[in-house]
Length: 595
Image (cartoon, rainbow, N blue to C red):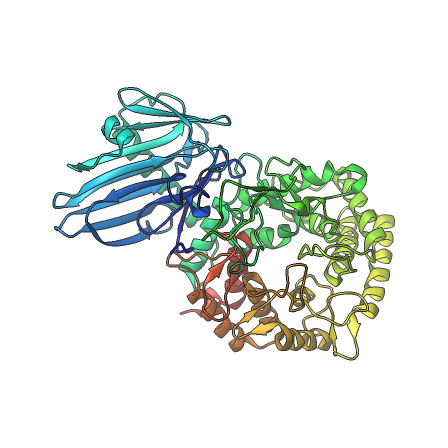
């Protein structure tokens, strides 16, 4: 059965998912939001698993084991046959410094070597294009195969038999083989030499990158793996960070909750920047901040949309794909995201909150200027005007708009942080203006979002239901963690939204019915809130439990089944891995107290 026990490889240009048998089942070219030329994870309609994958099969296979090279996204898979034969397959995407710049080409490298016996293998490279509807045209030479599709042409360069590749005929692996799938360009050296150098340089790059991280004393391996995943989901060319490399992995079985997450959501900015800052991953953080500032500066009339393409483009029209049946046959498969057209008023606070870093963090090349502040003020004016206007909310509800507390609070955040920035720039009149606006918003939100009947803040102004975003009221500094209203809200959220050890986004029905699975990051938010109000041991227990629900490679999807612990939703989910990092940093004993 298809599941999400998959490994992620990538290089901040593209990402690919690999199953336990070393089959590549997902990958988009030429970048994250491109055509899924590896798409068997979503199953073709007409011929299930007959296209959109890359397998290196060991005949008469009897066992397998798989692991990352420590502190890297380089994956090794060992396959064993029934006759004592064994082969090791190494998969990665090149990523290292070369000629004074970062080298992260549109390329996947696979290296297979004999470990024991006489292993007999077969290489099946079945690329697709147009989302599984077509196969690319093929031409070949003495040591390469070209795959030509409308959007991109790829070249496989290898020291394996080209006939064996084209005809998928088995052969005995005598020593080792290298396969480079990348741009339609000639490889300038022997393919095994290139593959070996790329592997050595990539491993060295990641080891050095991990060495530069600031990590907590506890749960170091989990945090390092999460940090690597966060880096892999960052598009190096523009700085955008995608929500996940996949589209249309359903949030729950047969739920029709299938969305395309290969884009950049502005609301993720605060949490991602916070995690990167805590890790001291300064370059990645700065690139992301630059992307957010550029998108915000280009907002027409101060209006932001919730999600953008990784190149900053605004067009993400949503449509369904008929050629793919979906994960386990559970469609629909969607491209684009209707959320780009929704009204989500929290985005103004998200953009201002992220941009605040450039005014206060002296490590950054980016510097906060008065000109940038004036641009951000346009977002603040939008926030001030819209804070009690109905919207789709951070959960992107597709039913009737309401005035969501989180959106209102984030509008307050925009005004509050602008006041702080103005003070930093010694703009006294603007600081006074934005502090007055923030105070007004805070007073009204506090009155209308508090329910005396429930003894808690609620999800919508003047409403009577809860959602998990209320757990962020102290994190966003709308309330002090010592405020008894916050402690009471944490209790009420736990009572209403917690199922077993996991927290749901909300419990009420939406346009697709009642949610079946828990949203992983909400449990991390609950853990953080428990720690903030002094319930630290309870928080640590829940955190340790959630770590056990990662897949064998330490990765998390968007959702989790509270009954079985099975992962659902798009994968690998940036939000979930960021939640892990932030909770680990909050809960870990300090280094100076560790020994």
